[in-house]
Structure formats: structure tokens, C-alpha cells
Image 1 (cartoon, rainbow, N blue to C red):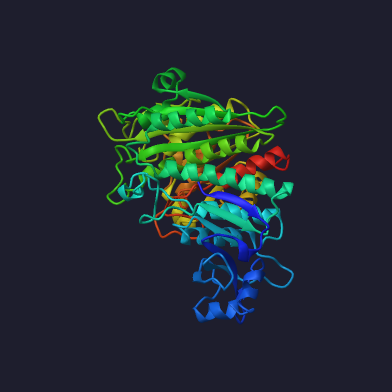
Image 2: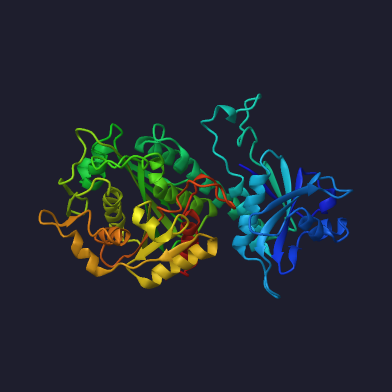
Length: 512
């Protein structure tokens, strides 16, 4: 993991491989952002002009490298675009700083140390820049032969190791607020990157039992309570949804409960994650071209796992319980068939019309288990429907809830931490489409509005009177395109930061 430090030293005297400065897109050309005054002065105040000559505009994510001025110990200056320059009396947004830091960190793969001289007005800015840099430096190279150098050390990106150290210039190492902001950034980034690792792991190594074992190891490390229900315990408890989804696989399902408690906690937040470690679609097999990335179908469980551990690392005054509903959805002679009826943990029966609508089945059992503890709120997270991707694209997750104010609060929390989301409705008229002549409910309804239908199905398995929300992260959970900002190709860790922020708000009493 990339190291993160605060520094008050002069830019010219710092020994590093590069100095990162910000440049914004102004009305008449690039504008050097605050934090880079010493660097600009060393260019005789002409840094913006030099960058413009090199073709830089200040557009978001743009990276321009140039030789450092005379007298600097760092050999290279890296100018990273912040997007449009803010209006007078306004400042750069947290997300613009976070993305710029991530872009710079990615561009500096192979470097040992970089000094970031980006705009830092307060401790919050230091936190978001640090978070962006740590997330941008992420790489996943475990399975690459060229991921090992001659001395056996890790490397990535065609042999280039991730940026090893980030020093934030303008930070205040002795200031409590700055120290807390950096500590939070490190905890969030490390656990979010752990979620990315899980999502990127191939399914032959990350089956339900292996995921559960990793959760047990993390629980021991961070003082969490953990309970793992294997296939025998699930059968004894009547978890028909999880068992039904996992029935066709040689890798048996698991339900993992991770509990973080604080002695001063006044609230209890339950998080439920869909953990399909590989989704073939089951008997309702996915068409060709739709299987290759289905290792990412456990992204919801990865996000919940990371959020619970982060809450523990931050010592938040709130009780947080994570439920990881883990199964592998495979076709075989023992697999659940379209037309089968499953008796769920809640006692309700479900007619399975499509075995590729499996995520809602494992979530239903976990939601009811979470409801039995009567938490103040439940939030489930899942790569649930392709319909949500059609509605919101590949970078935005949908939010549904049984309480409008709670849905709004989650949307605002996501916006605050830089995750794109959008509130979605739960139209009651769509519920009728799931009526079954054989069972209490079917796992499919109308095709149009399929993401909303899935939300309505989950709502049926939330305990009466409990505030609940559903996050469908099918779009942003796995990036199949080129990296951007602090977002890598592959697993993204979507929703981790939103869940952590919800836990913080709950601890502070600001979430109802």
C-alpha cells in the first residue's frame, strides 16, 4: 500500500521523483492552482504559459510532465488537470481534487516518492487528496508473471510498481484535524482497495468458503465478531434462498455475519451484501459474452465487508453488522430449475422463474436475518440488475428505499464522498407482476422497470417498521473501460465510501 504523509517543507528542497501541481481550465488558457506558488515562481511565473505551449489545457484528468526548474531536487513536475477553474470566492470541489490526485498517482507508477502540491485549504482537502492518491495508485497484479521483479518484489503496469509514497505539501503534520483526515483517508482507501482485490480475484480462488475464511481473518485482525453458517447450518436454519442459488455448485454457499460494536453506540446499522462469487446464470444460462466478468457479482458483499472493517478501524460510535450472502450460481443436475419453489428463511415461498435472477434470492434470506435484530436501518448493496445499467449507465448506482427521507440522505451521502448515485422509485403497480399461482411470490415480474421490480421483491423481505434502502451497483461496480481519475480498470469498490459515510452520519446522530 502506498504510504501517505504530510509535509511543511519547501518544495524545492524535497527529495522526490516528482512534484505534482494542479492546473485548471481558465477562460483564456490554463491557470496554475493554489499550492504550486513556489513551483510557478521558479518558472518566473510562466508555468501556465509553458504548460499551454506543451498542449495542456487544465482539463480534468489531463497529465503533463515537464522538467523541474533549476534548484529543485525533484527532477520532474507533473501538472494534473483539475477541470474548470472555480469562480471568484469559490474553491475546488472535493471530487475534482480527489480525481486529480488519482490521475497523478496512476501516471507516477514506478516512482518511489511524489510530492503533491495541490490546493489544500483545510484538513478536509488533505483527506480527499490523500484518498484520491491512494486509490489512484492501486494495482492488481497477483496473477501476472511479470508482476514479480528480479528480487521477488511486487510490481505492476508492465513492470512498474505502484507509487510508493505520497507527501502532501501544505499539510500540517501536528494538527489534530489534519492527522485525523489522513488517518481516515488511509483506512478508507486500504479497505476499499481490499474490496477491489476481492472483486478482481478469479472465481476458482474466491469461492464462498474462501471468502468466508478471509472475513474470519479480517475479523480476528480488527476485533470483530464473526459467525459463518455453512451449508449444514443453512439447511438447519431454513435458508432456502441461499441454498437454492448454491445448489448447482460444487462450492457450497455461506452466510457470514460480521459485527462491529462500540460501547457508546446508540444506533445499529445493518449492511447486507450480495456475494455471488461467480454467476453463470444457472440453468437460465447467460448468453455468450456475458460470463467473462461475472466474478464481480460479489461486489456488494465486498463493499459491505470493507465498510464494516473501516468502521472498526475508525472507531465509530455506532454498531455495524455486515451480512455477506455468499453463493456460486452454477448449472448442474442438482441446480435449482425454473419452476422450482423455494421456501425462504422468512417462511415465504418463491417460485423461481429465472435462475439468473438469483441475487434477490440470497439477499432475501440475509435481509430477513438482519431484520430479526431490529436494527435502526438496513442497507443492502448488490450488482443486481442489467436494467439499472440501462437506466443509469456504467458510473451511477440506483437507490431505492421504503422511506423517502432515508433515500435522500443516502443520495446526499454518496454525493458528499464522490460516488455517483440517483434516487429511484418503487412503484406499487409493478408488484402485481410478481404474483404467482403456485407460491407467495415469483422472483420475476414485468420486464420493463426490471431494476425497480427487483427492489420491490427485496422490500417483501424487510421486517415491518424497519427503515431500508437498496443500492443497485450493477453499473459502477466493475469498470471494463480505461481507468479514469482514481478509478482503475476492473473492480472499483463502488459503494464502500457511501456505506462508511452512512455509518459516520449514524454515529453522529445525523441520519435520523
